[in-house]
Length: 99
Image (cartoon, rainbow, N blue to C red; front, top):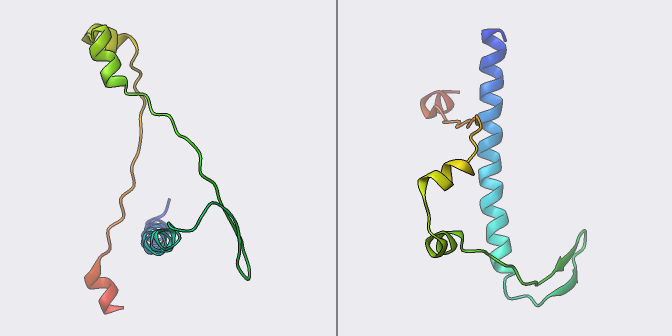
């Protein structure tokens, strides 16, 4: 990728990430405002919101491992590793303010 194209792509990725973060905050605030609404179907002007309540099971694997006897050998036998990537955009505030 050419330097100019890379710079543009990095800036676009950072801008979009910042927008998503702001939209996520707004969505979370709206979700909190709807927390007391009872389950069911609710109509807006443009959207219909369906609120469903259901049980969720969670297994305490740490407690199970402690009960049956945890060993590093057992853990190693059942652990897989994969390569992962994380992209963390950071705004260059001085450049943004100067633009």
